[in-house]
Length: 555
Image 1 (cartoon, rainbow, N blue to C red):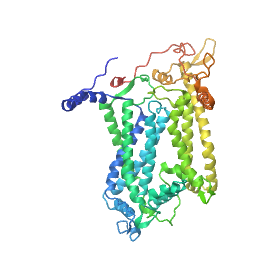
Image 2 (cartoon, helix red, strand yellow):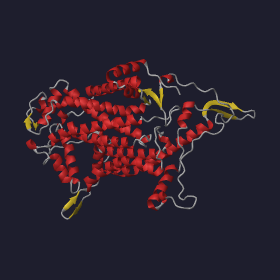
Image 3 (tube, rainbow, N blue to C red):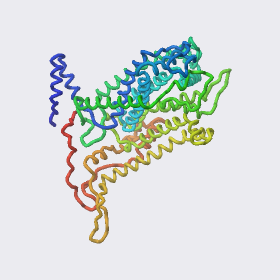
Image 4 (cartoon, helix red, strand yellow):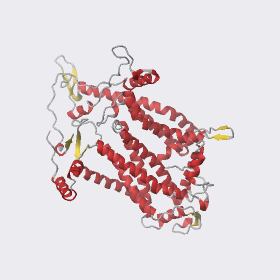
């Protein structure tokens, strides 16, 4: 295979740097690095761009925000709150919104960017999960992604709690109850975070502490994880979708410079433009309508940001269970919703790559992604988790649903209590059947070709439809499926049991392995596949898509 030549712009830049830094080897190796091209890869880029926007707008807001619970009397531009007692945190947020030039726009861009950051991380992780991109050697990067999402949830919670308005104060009150429900260490966690009773007027420590966590500690951790994530991805190569040219040992795509760099720069501007438009025209978190936090005030229809909805929903549908013993009360109605749903989702996601590797025995390196249909168990588990998460998220708005659809709040709560348990199992079964049906369709395309719409009449007067071979690119994608490998025999030729098949753990692994591959539909090329059912030979091969010569191959 001929060596790809660098464009003149690349050579000129490298020569410029080498004359001054003597670093030709490093830069040549990296600016020519090839990146596969697929729309779904942009999901991770959106998360990165949103994080950059968050850092920039957050720096702007920090210059005017006062993280203090000192009580003041408001006398500002928003006259409807003039004379109202409030914390300096709330007053400074009103000042940013109404008196600082561009302040309200920056607040709204910051909030929209935070939502986009969490949504894009979630979508990116779903893409990684459904395509099996977390498999060896990328397990560490998968765990880093889960860590970033977890930190993002905390960062968002602390961020929208800073203004000390009625909505954020209600969220902090829930956070206090969740912390105190944890046995033994709950009160210590609560006192460590809040620094005393909440709210505590002029001497309260919660807002200053949240400010430090929000603008210093958690962003620093996120920045470190993002950097580690990018460095590992750069070293291991980006995963690729199955194509005709892509193999496990060869990357097919565009060079980092100038093609990928130009594209990613444009994507950043697109992302920034969309967030700026949302900040300018879509109102979000209008704290002046909520008023300052008052423990005695309550409002209907209050909702947290979407990524915290799962906790809100779990709290709302949980029965009021409590256990009292030895003078202590264990509040299961708060403890279980606080720990169980998110524990199931995050712990299951963190362990899944290692569980899959253990069940399948597949310890090979993987650089080409799976199609979701070719891993029906994995895809079914993923859809089941989405269903579980989504139902809890909807349950967080059970009062709004009951009011808007004119149904009983009691009936709505019981509906979610039932569906959150049986819904994931139904979703798993349906998803697996759909995946297997798509596998059978792929096998039919490879074995018999695709329908052409041409009806032929035989000499005997019979009618049949002519089938034509699938396009070369489509055949390559379909044949990228790895058929299920047979399970290792439980005993060897001498009848000696395999160590991995002994004991309860060995039996469990064997059962899970059979469940993983039991319904697999083989997709294979058959001899004479170039002819359809009526004996018509293949037509001429289609030419490769134009522009292929602009791409590069890298081993």
